[in-house]
Image 1 (cartoon, rainbow, N blue to C red):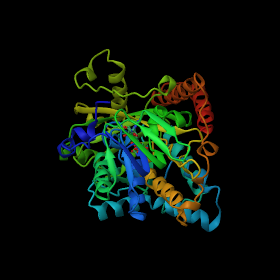
Image 2: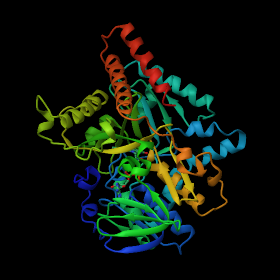
Image 3: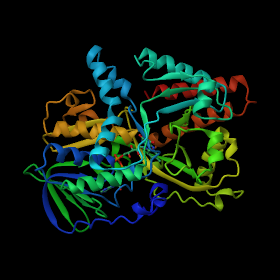
Image 4: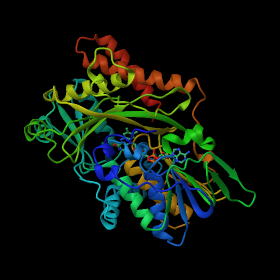
Amino acid sequence: MTERGFWFDTEPELQARSVSAPIEQEIDVDVAIIGAGYSGLWTAYYLKQYRPQLSVAILEANTVGQGASGRNGGWLMGSFSGDVNYLNKLDGEPRQLAKAIIQDTIHEVSRVCQAQGIDCDLHHGGNLRVAARYPEQHQTIKHELSYWREQGFTEADIRWLDKAELDNQVKMAKGQAALFTPHCARIHPAKLVCGLADTVKRLGVKIYENSAVVGIRHNSAGSTQLRTAKGRITSRIYIPALEGYQREFGELARYSLPVQSLLIATEPLTYAQWQSIGLDNRPTFSDASRIVTYGQRTPDNRLIFGARGGYQFGGKIRTEFGFNATEFNVKHPSQSQADFRFRHRLLLALFPQLEGVNITHGWGGTLAIARDFAPHAVFDPHSGLGFIGGYGGEGVGAANLFARTLVDLILERKTLLSTMPWAFKTDVKKVLKPWESEPFRYLGYHSMNRVFAWEDRLYSRGESSTWQRKLAKGLADRLEGMMS
Ligand SMILES: Cc1cc2nc3c(=O)[nH]c(=O)nc-3n(C[C@H](O)[C@H](O)[C@H](O)COP(=O)(O)OP(=O)(O)OC[C@H]3O[C@@H](n4cnc5c(N)ncnc54)[C@H](O)[C@@H]3O)c2cc1C
């Protein structure tokens, strides 16, 4: 992968970062981690916090933050995909405690950043889910609010904003109302991942960049050897913190679905343009649609906006997204430019005042979806394999929470975290569900995506007939139901 994406391209200090040398020898460590994204780095961080004497090494195929951690939308959430399913395994006080632990994730990340001097432009401005492009979105967020109330989420967790309150936060041309939650902060993803890498290096963790793991061997003595082109690491405990790249690592390939997500960024906007938009308190935002959109006002005053993308047959990872500012506007664009243009159309539907504003960047990355649509933290003391991931595109905060959980399991710390319903101490394959084989995986994902896009198109075009909308909604509801 060569493109590094917007967050690195617009931050000269990050571009100039020195790259650690690849591994070129054979070494033994206590814990070997594969992947220098949030999951790998947070795991290394907590291991060294609680057991400074442990030797920990990270092998990274490219450079720090080359995966989703350096490319995401920067929503640091105090929630994660599938969290309610876990909460529903608990009652009463334990349920409240688990909910508080999840929501505290933002504060935990913030505490560590402050303590370690990581400046990642964290701003705790909450999140808006807006009924913004078509009337049906009003009904959608109403249903969602009832759902949250049924699940015990109070006004302090999520509340209704009427049109006037919404306009105070953000002015969207067809904005009708919104749900607001305080449990979200905005960050600069690449500054967080690089700051974490510097921190763990200071704590004594060895990071080897340009060191892709190409082979693995389990020794009879109970240790595991990871092989790269020029080196080897042997350890008792090994953790593939690979998220969307698990496919590249045979053992766990079947347990995650690698899916792309793509974003665009405007040029920095002027004061007058921001006055016409709002977002003064930097809430992150989406519109209430099944195509999963997300946006934020960046630290350098651009708008970035993204939407979930496709899945490639066999779980092949898309490494090039190839934004081209000139081709972006031509009549018959390439697939990549068409992907970006689609996001641009959605952005203009929210903010027609941005017509004519330059789109300077487009990029994408790969996330992973677990078969039961929730992440897991699993440690198998027998094989030494530790697993975290399957965040379903909501891993910025979750990677911290799941890394902390995994470390408590590994170190046998008697903590609340290690008793949470997402913590498992057993064989990974007993916990994770495999995805269907091809072509069913491909067909399933594409059918779902198409139905969601079709429904969105029908709603956006006011003239579609009632029966068409009903049919699309019925189908989309069914497919969505299968995901929870
Ligand atoms: C475009 C996009 C937008 C997103 N927006 C948000 C958001 O706003 N909020 C949110 O909560 N989540 C978001 N996500 C999801 C979030 O970014 C991820 O869940 C999170 O970054 C996962 O971190 P990770 O460390 O597990 O994986 P990654 O960051 O993907 O790290 C895995 C690392 O493993 C390395 N690797 C791969 N193969 C090998 C190998 N063989 N050997 C060694 N190393 C290897 C990769 O190079 C990579 O650096 C988004 C994801 C994408 C793609």
